[in-house]
Image 1 (cartoon, rainbow, N blue to C red):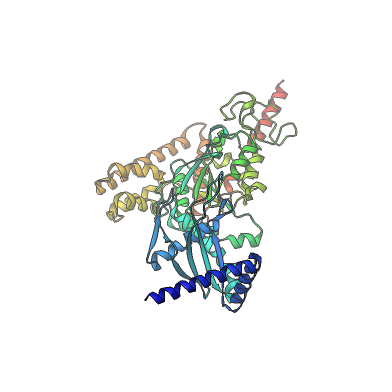
Image 2 (image 1 turned 60 degrees about the vertical axis):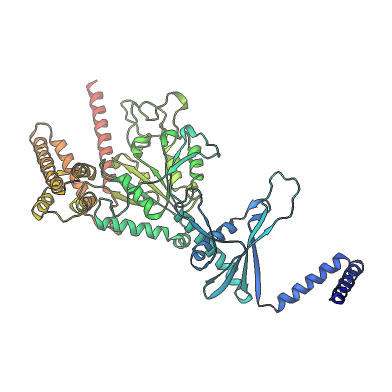
Length: 540
């Protein structure tokens, strides 16, 4: 046994001598060239090629590493035997990942790839202002050489897109609002956010099912239409105008759209934006896959119809289109502007700035965004704000109809199988009662423990409302000097019926008649003012 150990020690000595001799004879450069030549020969005869994706690229985080880690989480949960579990900030789901030095296979368009999560200890580093982690992490992708072109052109893009979808699905949606006075938060952002937990969905939304289906189809086509918008040369955005009486579900519709698409919501408060420049900066700080909302746009600032005469402009009745008056609608210039500030430091957003915000060059600084405006009085808005390209779809939120009522009965009472006699009575009076879904919901909430009582009380309320509406209509028609108001009431009813019954491509109301009526009313008002001015001159 002693002889074996002696021979082994002699071999080690010979090996050490040869190593010292090689290092003395062959310099490091020559040894490095030899190793490089060996690897080149090896890879030439090998049928695989390798790609390394490190966690840190220089001093910055490699986004591709995070995307691969998130993408493999969906496959690792099924195929992996040893997994690492993580849960990100503002995330509602647990993410599965590969543990250290684990391997998993994946396939794409018939090509098989192999991912290996490589974790090694980092060498001791000198002083640095930004110290690196102790472990060096990365992914190694092994593919066959014949599939190299497929991986570089399509597979990595597919991984990135899938990771973005998983991140958006796992992450809680956020509701943003612009900071007061344009101030910035601690991170330098002009938006403040809270988690968005609104439970409204299209299943619970009180609206005609056919109209809901049309809106859902339009939203789905928009979300899947990146190639279409690129092919047609249009910015990847869409505009919705929700209008109708208060309490008809405009805010619930916005929440349902956000939950359906998985988008964040940016609630823009125009009264806190002072200039067009601030408005553009807010738009630049919004993210893709988001809904930008301006509620009650007719009440936010003075952005009404430019054809209306300027208040306090004298008997001449000059309009915003006159040469002597600026065509830009300034929210802080003049009394009653709605800016809430005095002097020259008020709101100076112009209609031109808002139009460029929704449809100008600055509107395409992001992608896959939806603009939603809401109003209770569509006739007060400037027609330039309503045209296609800015507000592509005009959705009329009507009073509660019978199909919408059946949805509310199912939501609040848990069923829609109501007594047939009571249901027929409700169907007869609901159109005449002109109750909003909010009013109907309040009646059902009070009696949600007793479904039969809730339905009976709802029928009584509907009948009382219908009788009151009929009496009001009779008084308007029979009263002296009230013929004009009666005609206006009938005109409003006809407008709502036309909005509900008019067929269109999407099954959603594209209300242009209201804009025309608003313009006709404005022109009639101008003619009346001109006639009054002529009479005054004659009298003098």
